[in-house]
Image 1 (spheres, rainbow, N blue to C red):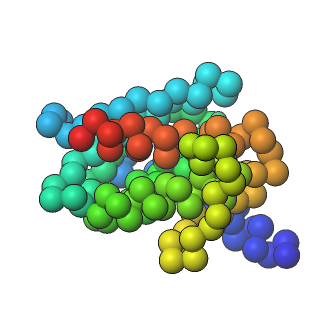
Image 2 (cartoon, rainbow, N blue to C red):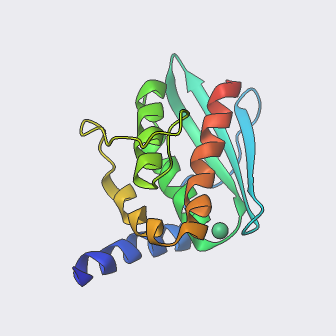
Length: 148
Ligand code: ZN
């Protein structure tokens, strides 16, 4: 379906041109930095969590378009949502990226967890070197959550 691929490319380009939630949050917001040395990508994630809900998120950093678009899409997907929902979303996203769970088993897609626009990134799976670009923001998000 070439039409669908065009749509996906458009979503990714839009997030690259107009990154959402760009910036920083002052302490006591948690802050984590992620690096992908294979590509030179760097992502900063700032999180404000209140009563188990991500009330604010900002992202910074630099790198390839996939890493930056994924970070922008991540920020949009998690803002205003409960942390446990967000953890389920991260797991679902990693499953889409063919990343195994902690025990090395494939992650079964949970139909209750909707990916929405994030599905635009599923084409990245065809390019294994870019998977680390796409997942960098999500791993950095987990680091920031574990700090908070
Ligand atoms: Zn990259």
